[in-house]
Image (cartoon, rainbow over all chains, first blue to last red; front, side):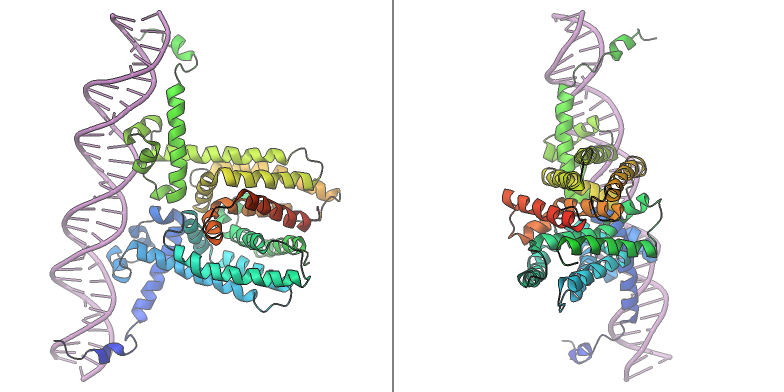
Length: 215
Length: 215
DNA sequence: CTGGCCTTTGACCATACGGTCAGGAAACGA
DNA sequence: TCGTTTCCTGACCGTATGGTCAAAGGCCAG
């Protein structure tokens, strides 16, 4: 019979510094490798090398490759959902949707690997995050559809099907991350400059806002 | 020294019926498996099972997994480029771009697996078709940009950056294939009906054509 | 200093994968 | 029918991968 260890255990985790640091290291490496090789093509050895840790150490922090992958996808999903704040509380579609486009374009720029992992996961039928699609994403989507419908009913924008508008917003903004390599190739092999990113945002906003009659 | 066999060899391939049929079988299976598992996650065994052939038979027609994959990607690229015909010879943007949207949406519907394979390939840095991006795709893109610019100069549409317009067209239309699973999940788990596909096409065309001032 | 926990890691294992090959079966022209 | 080419396939092989483990190393409270 062990002594009453609960008292000690109940305390906040004692020394999470090393753990936090190493998990961050591993997750960063994993995000990149999963994005560049897909789940099936990624190897724990590759992730370990990129993180600068021995492979066995990865399994100390994440029991399986699947667990690590799941965590990467979840992290991205969080970031992605947070962009919704731009949407909420906006009086008119130009502000709400324009802000959403800006936010999602910024995510595509800052987290291109994450976006790719997400895209791969969904393309393959969402084997690990199907439940998220059915619950969180569905609720989120329903909410925004209602918001858009309110704008339409108030005559603030044209009567567009809100669902297809959302798909267009997702597709267009994420394209700059997921197909960044193609865009870079068509840009003389160079990444977009600050100015080019501004142009991209402006072009997207211009077309869509005018397209929904909210310009 | 062998007898002069060249005379026989020079003839058109004698019996291609079986070969053609089996290659088609294999390519169809491969397209699906590569789409659903990615290159790294796909196995020759899986493709063989889906094609209804023993694994060794695949290697008779396609020497390596890479060769098979390359062929799948090339086939998709062909189909994808052919949609350009809608673009060409159109007098005004509504016809040209509208037709292009219709054509690409139809491809997303008919070849969702191919679109996914293409997307994965590009997302992973186009390791096998980088040369296509730099040559064929670049030329194709430059040509369409000129066509769009002509429309702009003729006052037939608003002065949008043609490049970003193209990206939006690609992103939006391919989204219905690449993220088809997500769309299906948000559609009560059911694939889009004929009517819903018509609505999707109409919505996309409506927003974009109005967005570029060509409605 | 010391005891206990967290962390690290090289060595190891079972499995699954891409690919090979030899020998046989069809298919076809003559 | 015969000879030649194409096609088929079970058995096999080397390798790489995800994961395990036990022993060592480090860190901190008491």
